[in-house]
Image 1 (cartoon, rainbow, N blue to C red):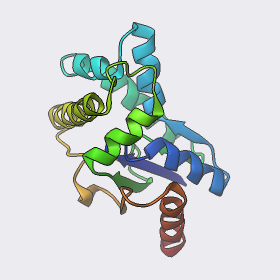
Image 2: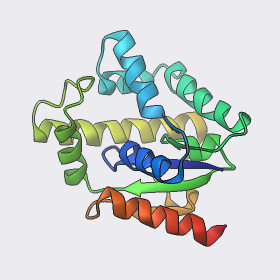
Image 3: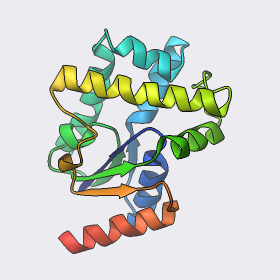
Image 4: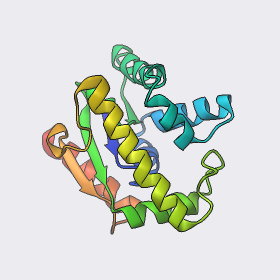
Length: 179
């Protein structure tokens, strides 16, 4: 079983995916880590890499190829990646939603070194909104899909007002209900 966790920036994808993987005793993979690694290799921020990716589709293609290869490996895992639901069609697809202000507070509070543009809360809010818009536009252009459309997912959870444990509980309950 592969569980793909998608969602808006700051929705808790990585945190929830790690906690869910731990609860279920499964390995965890993250496309966000792929993106941060690629940005660091180039000596730029994630937002800068997202902007470059608007005209250089090889960046998204590399991340997507890494995700797609996971289904072929025929193993159980939890992956957080915006498009894992699309590239791993046999996965159980979860989308985490979040309001812009909550997302900005979370991202700013993480002090991600690879996201140097997040100098204060308002700058983080602007860069988070810009990043989400950039990604949505690219995915529509490259693949003709809208990753924000809840119809693409088996389960949608708004994480704005609940903690990680409650989100994981909701996902685990859903998994049990569909098994």
